[in-house]
Length: 180
Image (cartoon, rainbow, N blue to C red; front, side, top):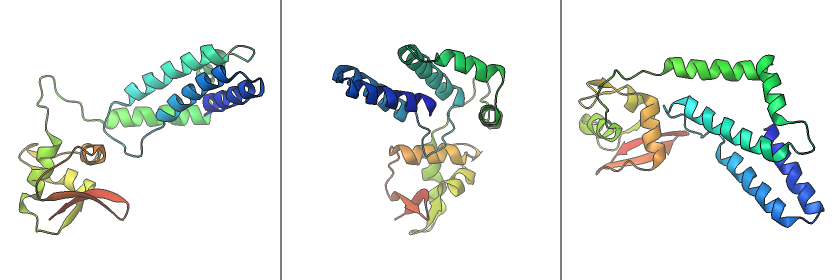
């Protein structure tokens, strides 16, 4: 948030100085930060991947924005040395999400979430709607039991789930599938 505010201020200064090339470059950095915003879906992806991407982006921005300002790297180091409540909350959330993930056993089977969804609807009446949570908690042959709601939600949010007779819909702000 502070980095995007710094980028925004740099854009405004560059425009005031009529340095439009620099303003365009800062605008690209701002768009990149916007693309790093957490997605609405909470997929079961490894949260450390997003963390590494954000840290890399912050380091790049720090190098570009630190001229004439307090270096962002120093501020980050200070936040690490004495974390405030927001930093501690972010760390707790990251560790909580990481601990909640089901690790796959070495050599374990990689399952197809699309097959799971299709198999769950094999015995569902036509016209019935199941939200992603119900689909994830239902058993299938693909998984030999339930999947995870987050994996189902990620598959449905991706727009890549296609199966004859099944339609992805959002009902009461919950994404799911209706059997036609």
